[in-house]
Picture (cartoon, protein in one colour):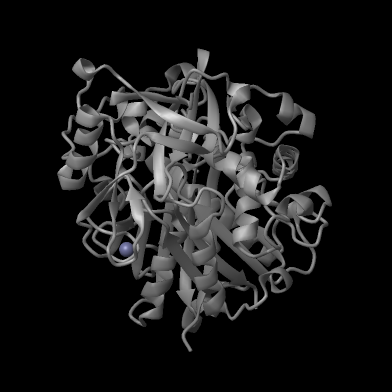
Length: 384
Length: 157
Ligand SMILES: [Zn+2]
């Protein structure tokens, strides 16, 4: 059977601002590192197809796709852009290799939100123009609405969400790719400014700039390119509904459906036992708890207890977001999911430095497309 | 990665850009029904799928569960309950608001879904899930066929 492996990774960032480099230079830097990491391949002849994950409004271009090839070495080659999220990009690369027509595929994603002067207006523009946008206001009110109902239905608490922030900002201190490492405690979070009740300022991820490139290969060539390939055992993605009016407000249904799809492909029947660690979207503190439950890494309503009892911390039975998550690495737009993948790869290769987990073989990475979407994707990765 | 890097921040250049885009968004048949019932009759309408029996608010021309056409409208009145809520303390640029804004998802008896709207005539700490509320409409002459023809929802008197 044809298998798919990640054989190279390269990253730049993540930082709060990057006035010294253009987005193209950022991508060039990440790509150069990834090609070197994948046995020093040349994009001009060794890569069969390129995928970039980007969204016009985040980039400030109409038809941004056209601005991607040169900095990746993909001029005159086979490239397209996926709009969605980097784990949806990964799924696309996975499928290309599965067809048997492509052996080596490069996947790129970046975010440079510091170039967007009206970042939250772009988010607001993603909302329904007739039902939601005319109400005005900061679009993250949608997350406030969701957190209220999530806590109400599951019994998880605001304090447990604050613990997620403390854990992830702390983990980020040990991650050289993280922009927002900090030593903060639960009270710091609970006493930070009210923003979107029940969300306080420190419950909300801050934007960050950076880029990541990964090289995927079929099992036929993976061994030539890498001594420590990480295998993509399953991918999944799902959209719940575009309508704020009819969506579920307590559970991350999209993540549940995406995870079930990925687990099925990977042959995982009992995720809480078979998965060693996870990187999940935590754009808002409560999302980590909600996503842990959707990924069936614990029983419904128990994610808060896991963080409280130390199980999701480094050294616990189910470490989550050892990278620092989005809270620690920053919200890098479409590259946010790629951050989750990067950490999963580094942990499985044993290259996570002082935050390295011991004896890990199976990791799960999950992304969410952010407010106001109900779209998510999941990848199951292993090192065997 | 570049062999040369800029080391003097006073020499870092950028170019400002601005994207001006204007649109009209067509309301469509179901939108037309929904917004004109608010404007003309102070009524909130849903659409009933004859296949699964669900009433969806706001109404659409097709059922998102069955992918069947919806042809039956249901008057849901103007009273509902708070399903979930939030209180927003900052504006879209991050500046602190003088008065926080309360938003809620209001659900209606017998209907799936609801309406996102503001709450008014209530203090933030008084809002609760399950609280009965009713729509407060703008005066007829000021209505334009917009979701803002409802000013906000207030606690039922
Ligand atoms: Zn139906």
